[in-house]
Image (cartoon, rainbow, N blue to C red):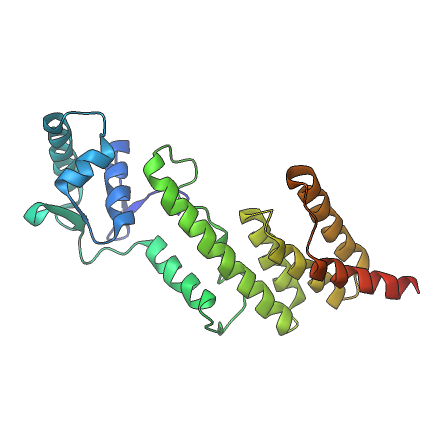
Length: 229
């Protein structure tokens, strides 16, 4: 997901930047786009005739490299061929399952490592920004659920790893920080728990002028006070 790659019969198919941009635009849409919509999205500053010419050229190049096995441009609509699988779509289905309450059969961190992947990292086209934001929100919620699940079953290392991955998606979100602090407390590491809390507290104060929630303060405060006593 960090970059676009096309594999056909186990071999990678070389795609130019223009071809990759076309495939990305179609793949992110899911149901396909009319030729006119594609032209407007990809070349908003060009006249209709020039944009249509560029689209025809790109479609021809894709067809030359992949036949009809990647894109279907029949009936004036461009969509992925039926046999094409997209890793993002697979990842979204699995992440939604977790968010919607499906209990994972395994909390093996390697199995869920795809949730740590960014979508098209550094891709310059602003048309993918919305998809990137949508994926980040979804994987953040899924990582939170997995961290909570791991904590519930006593898998402290997995809880910390999932929570850390969630923090890398959104460092201002309190939930993964709180789960991480709770995981450290569960194994009796009060110092690490307090460090997680104070680092988050300083971040909120510096960037937003806010404080962590009372539940987070109580979580670490009670344990710290009990140990001191």
